[in-house]
Image 1: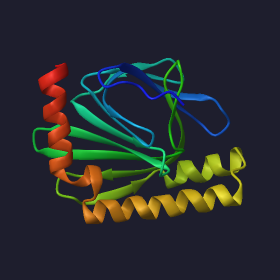
Image 2: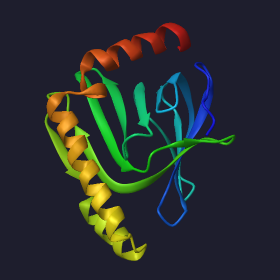
Image 3: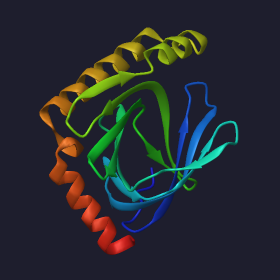
Image 4: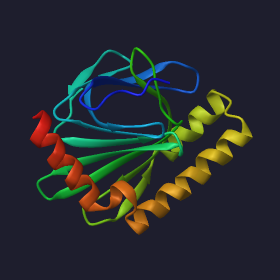
Length: 176
């Protein structure tokens, strides 16, 4: 796996279990990268869906990817606080094209007050059957969902507002 340098601009690509392209974020600035973690920043970045539709994100975001867990976290900086969108996904890899991961549908949306909601369990169930997820994979994904829930409850890592604010300040100072 390639380890991007701080300041590199990378594309982010999510795929589905069957290998089909799901979504592409055109540009994220690498704020920190090592063997296990990549932290990025972006603002109003263009996103392309698998059907070709495009849209732009509405606010600055700090992204958190890890090779140690099966999830990634997007922290969105809004007027009334930090919101999070978390994807249950494969650990990421980076090659010469992009940062890549498999999106497994299950998501957690975390609100500024710390409350959260699990999303897309119906979509997960459809894809689980359609793409024939092995039982062992399903067990991993649900275990990772519980770990992610625990992180939210404990305000661990990116769910600690000071973590996100310090990376956002760094991003604004150096890259905006």
